[in-house]
Image (cartoon, rainbow, N blue to C red; front, top):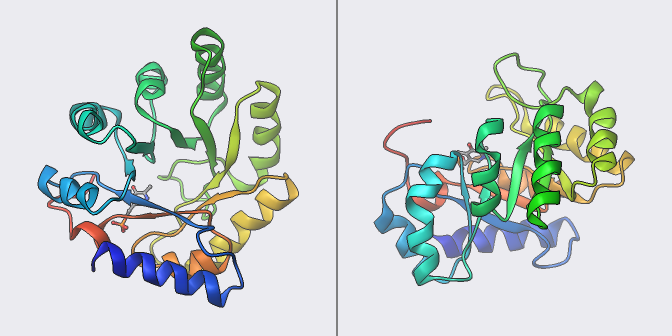
Length: 218
Ligand SMILES: *Cc1c(COP(=O)(O)O)cnc(C)c1O
């Protein structure tokens, strides 16, 4: 699928949900993709990208940003505390804030550096043991803790279980966000971004549908 097809489908989903045109941001997930494919999407004028790993992003994005200074990258994958400082340099937003230790490290860095990427709290809506994210029952407390640290919270993020109806998880994430007064919802990937838009996604994270399948999975 081309980038323009994806944007057209997002626009259509926004319209049928009665949402304003352009209220959903498309994050093109470029992890593992060859540089030529990423360059092609940059040349089409797209500027918002997502990566899963600090190291991979550090290896490829500084050069792209030299050529396309308005390109922005969001971190979508799990973050080790010892990479938090590097993440501050590379990313406009971080979608994987999921534990107090990381929140405290971010708060210290924000004070020291005088800036902070926007933060999405990742919620493990499917309560899967192998998956990152705070449990739904712990979300309200953790959000309050992040606010007490003055972190710039943009919203919530989830990755639904592969074998469940994603819209149930999108609806749950929306409910937790609403009761906490958060407007950002990072949800929806290649297979389900339209239902995420229908349920209020402000950021959809689409990889393989734009770039083609990845040579290997992370
Ligand atoms: C890889 C990834 C995506 C994109 O997945 P596709 O199915 O290729 O669209 C979105 N979000 C996260 C967190 C990812 O790791």
